[in-house]
Image (cartoon, rainbow, N blue to C red; front, side, top):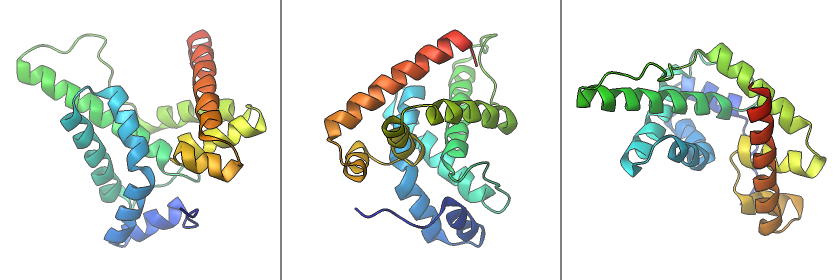
Length: 179
């Protein structure tokens, strides 16, 4: 599979003009990444599918006013995905007639999310060159491990190991720094 040259900003502009094909291109580029993320937020396949669909619907609806804080729409989509998952959790709790737990998280405003994602990007930028490129390709651009391996001349196993190691490293930093 060749590397796409169309920027996320160009896709957003095309969506803002009503180009449904642009939405399909965004979906093709990021649906797998959002689905993996949604599985971390929900336990049910139907919920995961609904969260991902709602994230892309929100993207379509807000394309005309969306300003990307980075060269990629992925951080914005991840925040939207998380907010939809939280809203779905609230609906389930209310539907059962329970009260929301006091510590149930509220959807974040986008400035706080942007700041949190900036910190993650800074941590990725501090990684050794190969690890940084793997994280950029797989985590930020939504490429598969096989695509990253091909682009970097590595085996899929090496990419998998490096992603796993860097996730553990970032998790440890987060747990100690409480960003």
